[in-house]
Length: 445
Image 1 (tube, rainbow, N blue to C red):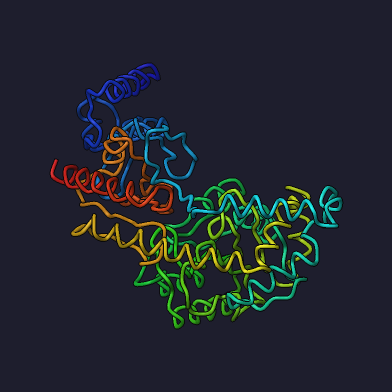
Image 2: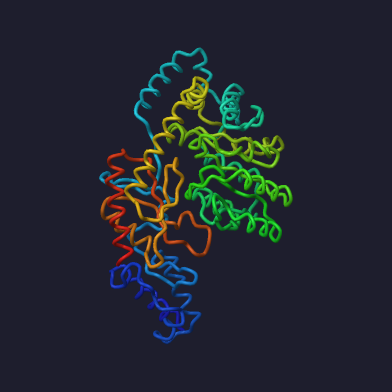
């Protein structure tokens, strides 16, 4: 087939999608059907659809076919921070904030300004943080069940930076990392940047399918397991203690490093012990204060086995040299005086209130969540289209995430994630009513 004929077909289909002649959500002919209709080889039809998918105009779903995407929805919705219109309600990202937090910051800045060590905060700091700051974090972590010395702790520019240096220090390009079939998009970004192979593990009740994980570790050279055992993002599960013990047993048997992401763990009052508490020699624990205090407070921390600390310290030096000392000083003051503990209590109550509103306003829909989390997963019926629903909501000034940025499998489920922490309660309630109506309308269309 001449290249010009192939390109003409791609251009014609692309034009039909962009002009709306092929409607969003439309199932396109099978590869064989397209080949028969256009008088081309099946391999060429496959190539046509692949190029359209690269252009972001269609999506292919294993066992279902090829569908026209709604091009009003950015392909990276929920993984790339999109500009949200000022009159739109953002249910894509969580920015949980409480009344009075700005006043807390004003007081903290005044206290730091009058402190005797202000001049030292203007200088370069140790790459992994000052010893007294790491000691403050160690005391905070002990209350979370992680007993670690200050020499095992490294201070980072948020939890995402902590994950990045963990990947830099502990993994190499081509390494296989076991992840949940639906996982945190920020780790997917790191995997792509550092050329890691993500091996998806399907979900079971309240956690990953550990039989599937064990089989994967027995048949593939799995170098690491990335997991969120306490408040999984996006599904909200909290792994049971028995499941955690089995996961650790699998890791000890087969040797992968465990990367424990605890960004949302503060939302559960009495969870089972963190993996890092039981197996500190094979676990890197990553968390921070962005979610529990404020998203602009980019202070994270990594707790690592002693043998990994030098490599992690070099990774910090290579990426940021050190965490800004002024921000770290404020964060550690709040850790020491109980401010962080108080904010965590208030945010747990806030998250529970938002979940209660969500359950009430979306009653009858198949919600997946934790009663104290800041997000809810909404699976859609088989014939529904998440990109179509997302576009409908965008036209109604509501921004949500599809499953695409969370999915690590070839088949992306039709679902949306609702982040509940970035608007006031009254607005959340009215917004969820619009979401409910749009979801019901989409399912019946």
